[in-house]
Each structure stands twice: as C-alpha cells, then as structure tokens.
Amino acid sequence: MVKTIKTTRRDFLKLSGRSALGLGTAVPSIVPRYVFGQDAPSDKFVVGIIGLGWRGMDLLNGAMRHSDLRIAAIADVDRPFLLNALKILDDHMNLDRQWVEGRGSGMKRYPMPPHAVEPYEHYEHLLERQDIDAVLVAVPDHWHAKIYIDAMRAGKDVYGEKPLTLYLNQGRNVVRVARETGKVFQTGSQQRSDDKFRTACEYVRSGRLGKIESVDVVVGGAPQREGVPDEPVPPGLNWNKWLGPAPKVPYNPLRARVEFRWFFEYSGGMVTDWGAHHLEIMQWGLGMDGSGPLSVEGTAEVRPGFYNTFTSFDFTFEYPNDIKVYFKSRGEGGVTFRGPKGEIFVTRGKIRSTPEDILKEPLKDTDVHLYKSDDHMQNWIDCMKTRKRPITDVEIGHRSVSVCHLANICGHLKRKLYWDAVNEMFINDPEANRWLDRDEREPYRHI
Image (tube, rainbow, N blue to C red; front, top):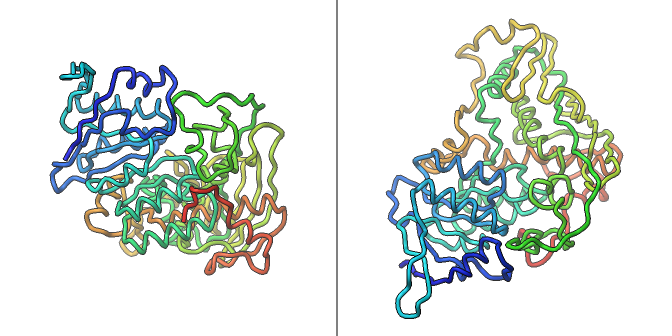
C-alpha cells in the first residue's frame, strides 16, 4: 500500500540544494514516496537506477527508450543529480508534481500522481522494494562490487557499468554471487553489441589473418592537472557515503563526479576505464574470454600533478600460443590483430584490414560466428526473459578488467609478473598477490 508522506515547501527547497540539509536524512522522510509500476503488466520489468551522473543518465535515457522496462525508482547520494533525473522522468511521463493545500494543518504537500518515480538517497532503500525486478548501476568504480552483490542478494538482475570492479579479487566474489543467486548480469561493455567489433573478432577467429602473432591495444593515458584546495561539502551531497569503502578524505571538487576516474582510490585511470573496453575485445578475438595472460611486464608513469593514475604506459602481455599483446597509451586508439596474412584494426565507428581484401570476402557458414547482439540493453532484457547469460556476462566482465588490474599492479611494482589465470593469483610472488585485495572502510565492505 502506498503511503503519502507530507512535506513542506521549505523541505522541497532543501532537497533541491537551495538551503542547507542534514545529509544523513533518508530521502523518504524528505520527499513523498511514490510508487511507479506496481500495476505494471507482467511482460514489463520494473527497474531501479542507481547512480545518476553522466553515465547513469545515459542508462536512464536508454531505459526510457525500451518499452520492456518501467522505471520505478532512482537513487543517488548527490541530490542535485537525483532532482535532475526526477525532472526528466516526470517530463517524460507528463507528470506534474504541483503543490496543493493540505487539509487540517494547512501544510502543503504533493498530490499523488499515478506511476511517479520514487527517489532515494540511499540505494539500500531502493533494493528493499519487492516490486523491483532489476537495477541499472552507474556509480564510481569503488562502489561497483558492493552494490552489485547487494542487488543480486536482494533478488535483482543487474546491468552494471564497466569496469566491473576496483580490484581483482572483488571480481571473483561478484561472479560467485551471480552464480549462487542465478541472477542475470550484463556488464556494460557495449562494444560487444557493436557489429564492427564482432566482425573483427569473427574474421580473426575464422583464421583470415592466419595464426595470430600479436595484438596492439591502445587506449591513451590519464590526464593530469594542478590541484585545487579542498572545499566544504556542497549542499545535497552525502560525501561520506560517496566515499564509501574508500579512505575518508576532505571533499575536493576534483575527486568527485567525472574526475574520480583519475584516482586509484576510486578507479584505475585509463588502464581500466578504456582498457576494460579494448582488452575485452582483444580477449574475445583470441577466444580467451574465460582465461588471461601468462605474464605481464612494462613501464608506467604519473606526471606530477593532482591525479595519481598512469598518464602514460607501455605493457606487454604474453598469452598462450606465443601471442604477444602490446597495451599502450600512445598510438591510434583501438585494437589491431596481426598475423602472417595481414592485420585487422577496429575501433568505435571504424574497421579496416591490410590488405583490404581480407574484409571484402564474406564469412562463410562454416566460419566462426559469435554471439550476436545489436542492442546491449535489449540483450539484457531478452536474457532476463529467457534466463540465459547475456553477451557480456559477469564472468567476461571480470576476466576483461582482470587484465587491466594486472597492468596497473605491474606498473606499480615495476617488474615482470607471472600470472596463473586458473587460480587467479601471481606465481611465487607474495608481494604481488597482496595487490589483489584492498582494505575497505567499514561499514562499506563489499562482502
């Protein structure tokens, strides 16, 4: 049963950030609780969206375009983000949250528009909703593992942004919980649902280049800049919750929102940000989605400045069958497969071969044809219906970002490392194995 919660206009102005607000207060005590989708047809999935920054808004817009999904709730610790998304959803559904006179006390309250989306500051409250079937998650990387695991244990299927995890051992835990709960988990590596990347991998695996000798993967390095002073926490941002499992530090505008990607405390720089995309395509093309390299070596540096992720790097992975993978920050961004018969280069919006005739000859029915998806979110929806694994299943997401984590660890230790991909640990290297885990701040441990 839906409960109407009264609030004053002053409360609403506080929510919108126009005056100070106690950040520990849960959203349901500040804004009215609306339920959207409780009477949804059985052929629609009722979903929640957790994280409403730039990538979360992409997921929100994508979900609005899919008729199989009905958005019931949104959550973010940054209330300006929450209100922005709420307005977009209200406009999309032609809802008008006008203030009307309440009875008796004279307080003002919202009316109860049908199918209104319910906002939450704390994602845990969203996960308590029994009517929600699945969640789409786009939060900073250091929150990924905990929210993914919490969501699956709450009975929700998950569409989770890449990179899957902040550090390597988290990934195996996420995979384990996905298998234990039987939840459908789509890693948000959309390149798997792009025909150019699939075509490149099909030609490579069909032997059009001969035995693969090497692969170049270029993603660019992280940016760098001078720092700015710490500031008071902006109104409406729960900074302690934003930090979550990461070390507690004062608020700085260069740590939050998009900039979090350039700090090892919250992400892995370009090594994981774009590496999770292109190294995944490399492993797809090599047929090694469930495996990994034998070793990694190389160099990495951080130019002086405020950010601490690698601004340049040059790594070499050794893969089975004498294949070398060169992962670097300089060159044309994309993936280049090389063999004795030529090469195929692929990146977003572009695919080419040398010689050109390689790609001009169509694949035969007897050639390798890979899992086909033309719409990454629709593939997730279809798999929620069939309960099959999606094109970028959680295991693939884990194995792909694992390669990125190995590179970052190598960059820090500055020596060659040997990897056991079956047991997912470094060989005879206790120091390197300590880098597979991190301390997490209580009470935000992922497991």
